[in-house]
Image 1 (cartoon, protein in one colour):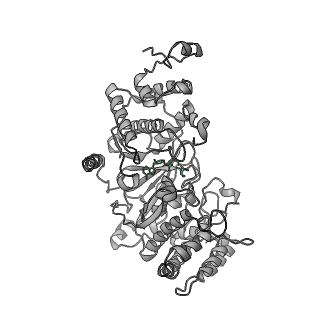
Image 2 (image 1 turned 180 degrees about the vertical axis):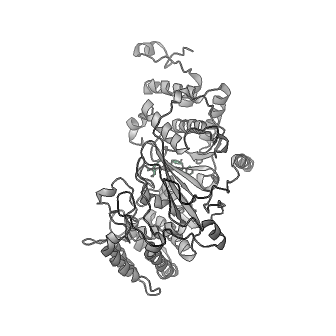
Length: 537
Ligand code: AR6
């Protein structure tokens, strides 16, 4: 029975999955305002046939050293540091004789350490205890020199600083995967100016330097198993991109919508839904808008201890890490879309049991702009994980409005006649309900409402929870059968929040059973009636 139900949901999933839209509008030349493309567009389409990576643009390094752009390690304004970095990195070039101590020296020089030296316990533990001798030598003699070449090639590969995706600005940056690799190699060696913890200029950005992953993360002298598994994912990525130049392109796009919509007036019904207890967003969401359960500081704890949905996605698709270099923390009306990031690794486990599980070949097709058809949207839920008091705060109009708006922005804003039929389904799940402690029923309903308004169907992975899979599927069917619109559900939801917490009961049941002209109870009425509120319609 379980095999047939598995076949069943997979059949339904495939029925919902759109044909990949491979024929994309070409990049305009010059790029549109608000879109920076860091490679040549004039010969991009001819060159695609020759299997060469896109050629950087401009042809010579042209600097911008200001608060709107990444401050490049190779900038003339950072000339003396860059020459120290170059000198140091060049020590790692001659393959065959590199030792772990040489790597430690170089990491310290590149990260600009003067007084104290970096803690490298996890890195050391990986190289000396976890990897076999052959694998360690392979990393030091082959992969590392390749990473050095990539890092040093920065001024030739990324010939102008990418713009920062600052709060409040709807901006896009497109880079080649090779450019991303060069920037990430620099992140590995921690070379970006002003991006250390102590620097106030980037206090509103996530960290980008990998040095935090090398440390023990706890008592000195021991490797941290989480960091070691993370490093395995990243080593695998570098092994791949140093063996063969990646040929594709990735776009990072900050979306901003400030105007709030009136949810109580929406007339849409809940969207088509497939709730699945099996499968994951990354394995089964191809061709859909895949949700990253994000932190406002994108990538969350990926370069530290964090190891849940967002961090895992960033580790198996490390090109996503570049968003930490580019994107300032997300505000309420903002989301980040990333198109074309490739998956390089497999994994098993989750959180403390997470393990790298070998190389992954990404077989998703590429569009005519050389981007894999992977579209990820990072939306950060509010965190309610601080005890019972924290949990209750989500049942509140302004909290609900915030999450509805966040999901609406992430899913592309309200649908219109032009885009309605073309929008791809959302592949999501328990957004905000793990580390962030949100309520499953509330958050899934919020996402369904946002899908309805943005004209998207929804594939919802319950991550093994079969009870919730059935409950959600049934709830959506009941709402549709009753003809409950998004507006009606919203009004009921707000009424539900007005109830004293103890009298609320299960959200889905309450919403189905109580009309929206619900009359708020006074303490006196409550004592004389067993029901929490009176239905007046
Ligand atoms: N596919 C589908 N569902 C998943 C997957 C997956 N691959 N992985 C986990 N889930 P969580 P949050 C389910 O805690 O609560 C990070 O540090 C699983 O049921 O990652 O929004 C971010 O950087 C899990 O419990 O998301 C933020 O700081 C649930 O989704 C913070 O966590 C929620 O996953 C966000 O926390």
